[in-house]
Length: 181
Image (cartoon, rainbow, N blue to C red):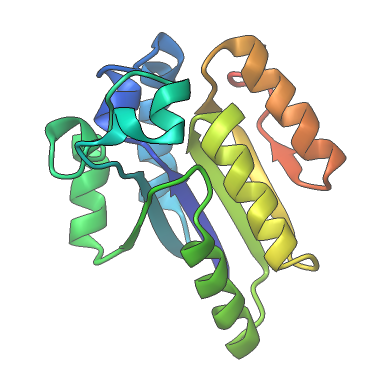
C-alpha cells in the first residue's frame, strides 16, 4: 500500500493570514496529484483554539491562524471536497508534526507493509519536514518521500533548506524543479 499525506493545505496558509504566492502556485499541482493518486490519501490540518496567542507557538509566531471551525482552518475548497467525497481521514494536529498520524501508519504497516509514504503541502520548512522526519522515525524502513513541486515553504530559501535537511535524513525528494529555488 502507498500513502499520500497532504499536509496543511488550508486557506490560512494559501490565501489567508499566512498565505504566500508560492502556496497559491502549488495548489493546482496538489489538486491534480490528489485527483490521480493511486493509493490511500490522508490529510492533516493545523488546528488551534482561540487562545493560540497564549501558546508557545503563538508567542513565537503571533499571527492567529487555522483556528478550529473558522474559514481559514478549512482546506482549500477543492481539497476539502475531495476529502469529504472520498471519505478521507483528516488528522487535526495541534503541533507541527502529528504523532497520531505516525502511530496510525505504524499500526497499518504492522498489518500490511507500506510500500511508500509521500508528502506534499505546506509549509515545507515547518510542518512538512516535521511530519516527514516523524514518519521516518516511526517507520525507518519505509521509503518516505516529499514532492518538492507540490510543496512551498515560508520563503523559497527556507523551502530549499528544508529539502536539503530532509535529504540528509534519507527522505527522498521528488520533483525538485518545482518550488525548489
